[in-house]
Length: 301
Image (cartoon, rainbow, N blue to C red; front, side, top):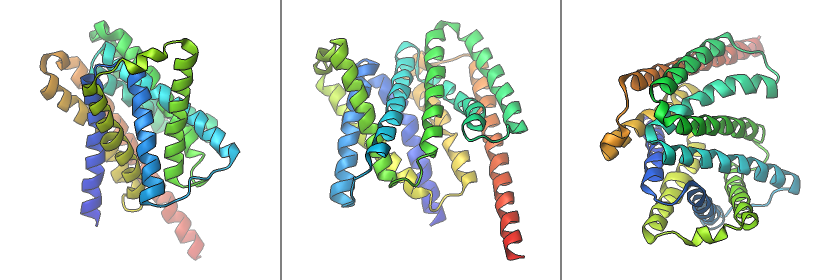
């Protein structure tokens, strides 16, 4: 079971990494892309929950409003992610995702009212240095880096608030209402901005790729990641999820070639940043495991 679960985990991380590739292959702008991704994904999720799993999607009005609010953060997170790809490239967008760990280290102590961890401060300094180096040597992609950093910040805020809703309803309902909520927010933007006609200006090729993006690369990995929590340790999860930028950057280089070729400083800084995140994750996972072990020992006595 462990080997099968590990393979499934690597598969969904690979799929997440390929999301950026599809973002570049789809010709539609970032706003239209996110609109259709959230529309199609919410439809697939609804069909899966109601028809395949035959579960209820009922939630309280209070929880529904929270989920829609968090879903709007998800929508803007994706919007800035794909905007970063459109104005720069896949490698820049994915490397900026590494700063999510830095933002989490700053935000989590404030929201959950816990002490700041020394290892997180050290890791934060390393990430800031690495991003500064990337910004300096790849300055032609400055707008893509700025969008990527905003994407990482929004993704962190989304994840932190999402963590506070754990256990309030099923994981499937949380994912469904957040994605559907994000779709509603994007829809309202189009209605009130008077740009709703843009939605119809999309090719059949893009619609096919968006269907693939919403189903295989969005709805499926989200449900699978929830299911794998029963079998995968925090250590394995942290280690594997941080491979997403590596998978994506390597895939982008082989698929798009010259447009994804970056400087040696970029690859070196990205690698150091990812290693810092992984090492910090390992330290935190071991510390948590040790705390649980101590608690169990104290309970026995």
